[in-house]
Amino acid sequence: MIDFGVIANRLKRQKELDADSELIRQTLNGNSRSFNQLVERYQHQIYCFILKHVPSEKAEDLAQDTFISAYESLEQFRGDSTFSTWLYGIAMNKVRNHLSRAPEHRYKYVSADFLLERQSRESSPLERVEQTLQLTYLLDRLPPDLKEVIIFVSLEGLSYKETAEAMGLPVGTVRSKVFRARQLLKEFVKESE
Image (cartoon, rainbow, N blue to C red; front, side, top):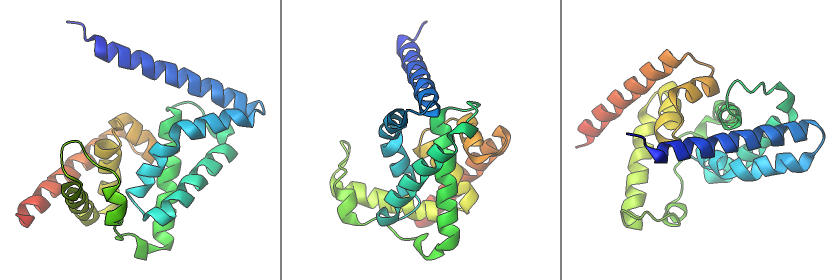
């Protein structure tokens, strides 16, 4: 049976990829407004990704640095991966550099006020805050390499291939790290019960 929803999503994604390619081409030809459109398209995703690793007061700066670096090195983008995957890789490097220089920020939690602004349809704001804090606590217990892959795959929704490209790892390594991270998270949950 044909799943038209899957086909529609693939067609939509292909249009976005084609649009990204055109905006990149225009930017490389000197049209900086085209890059602004790429920033508008991906700034929320990149900011939220970075926010999962660092406090909100630092996430904006790192997101901005990510786009500055992307703009400055756009000529190096070969198109082997999607533009968004390439951006995630730059963002991950910015986060790693920040954490290696300022390890005291590594385990700092986002304020409850910030989390209350983002209500879930399934649960109350307080329940959502508790779930987020518990997830943050569990993720922080993982070794950094496992935390990174599980965030890319499970929270950001990147495929194993996209995660591998963003992190510069073989796909098989990403698969095994995701498996190990999930096993450890299950153990952590059992310990806390």
